[in-house]
Image 1: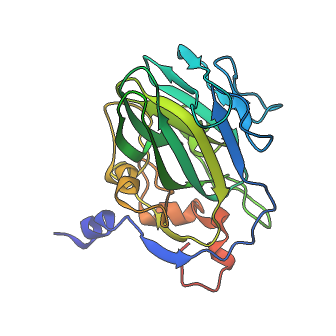
Image 2 (image 1 turned 180 degrees about the vertical axis):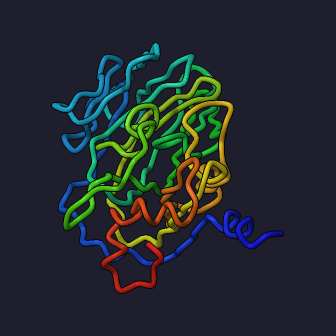
Length: 262
């Protein structure tokens, strides 16, 4: 194999390090779906709670969502569901987060798969029987193109349009599978989690639409919630061009004392 071909194959960087980013002062966020009376530390989510900059959270348009409200409190929780995939977004600063989700409903079996941002697989087939609820946790990285100290990551046009959820100012969660049902979501800042940074091409990046996917996009599914995967890969990029576009300089690694290629 020619050396140039080998270089083209070597387009992925996995760098594990302890995050040294300063914590951003922010209370943990808690969302109660379809039910009230859970305390002032929860935000109540109804079927018509659509995302806006003013509210900072809500469903994305496009799905027929209905919510079931039960008795007050968490003893008999409410939930929101749909017969199609649906999306819920929360405005958050760039960084790492642990997300804890309670799944389930009272009248039917629920099977839920969760993807984050641009279809990164987080949880696969969480099954709950009628009247039963289950809680699962995962870690997710969200990012901005702005680089501390000046400048921006050089994004491609498609990253500003069809792939915008990968670089915007919010965390977006996708719920799909057979009757996905969500009862509660809790989000906690997690700056000190070890982070795996990925660079690469279309075999690594977050593919925006079905039926396409990459191993980098699916990698998140195989880690426990105390490890974060930050996928900064993009279709058509090599290691050299990724570094030239400063695709991970926004993370602050370039100014870190940790060893880094970014």
